[in-house]
Image (cartoon, rainbow, N blue to C red; front, side, top):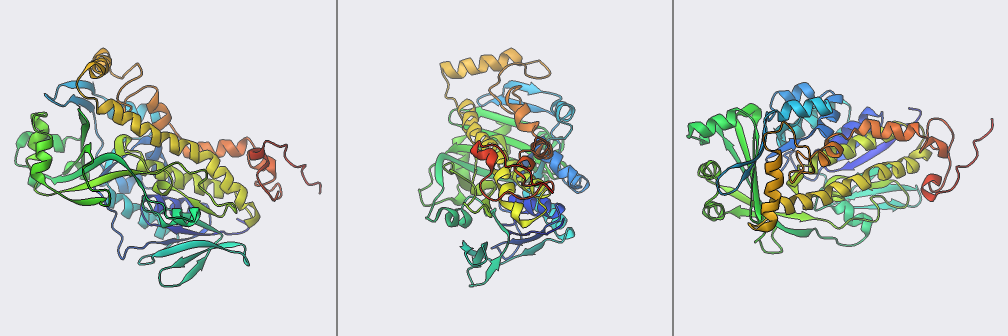
Length: 458
């Protein structure tokens, strides 16, 4: 680095800390501002798919993750009423590792957040808690973005990264208007069970031997998997939203929840019989933005602030890790501050279309998992039946987790390779932006479709 950028990141969740680690690895100075008074990721379990585990392992986090992860050996899709296996991939973990050279794992969000936080601190990132953002604006005198906190403190940086989630104030600053999330029509009951809460020996064995289970039925589906090295079970129940419009989360009724799944697979209902408390979470999304950046290209959005998605492919956190990785990798090629706008343009070019495509795909998965009994459901189940007994699905498949068309572009994505190939193809250097080829001020010529400016002669 000939010049270090100062990067200010809003939010210390999975997206913000991933960006912090990646930007620090790129050699820049990073500050993370978090509004909460303590670091505590909201939520329960989450699934980290190969597109993200390969990044986390490259950052040297694999050994720490192994201490609490659970690797699901198999993947089964059950019919809701009787638990019949519509699909069963017995060698799921083995197949995933072979195809993508990275594992599919299940972890608790708090564990992953702590691992990323510790890595960020090790790399010299400054994480400031109880720093609540008010707005981001341009300082026209300095030509830099500045961030004002609720207490009036003003912080400047070369680049501000809005990673403050679904209810993002960064997004509102960029748009200049109040912008509320939109309901998807679904809500989630989120449940975490420890082994000591489960008396049923058969259920204990299911928890202790990690596997991925889906139950799919009319207007609803359920996912269950082990975490904490097989000592804890995570269950998410996805059902139609009945919360008032102004309520995003509230305690739920255990009896109401059980009633919604009366008549479903006895294994599932026995798990639900262990539940004593539960929360209801309204599932929200956002309209796609025209751009994730400001016109000056020194303020960007990542993660749920710009591409929140239904949890039906477990890609919210994984896509956020991708965002953070690509941002840092692009900025690793920046040698001077003048190159930053073009690097930001490349980041958006590489990330926006993929992030939004994944978000759209989650709605397609909802359609295929939530079919009511009838001709469409019967046709879907015939596709499942045509593949049952095979080691892997061989046709376009209702479960995108196993689909030979969707799974490769979802799990096979390599963020490092994506950036390095872009640089190799001179998407930046041909514009004199990076790699020591000088500076071209103005909009990226490749974006405009013009010829690159002539190289300076020395």
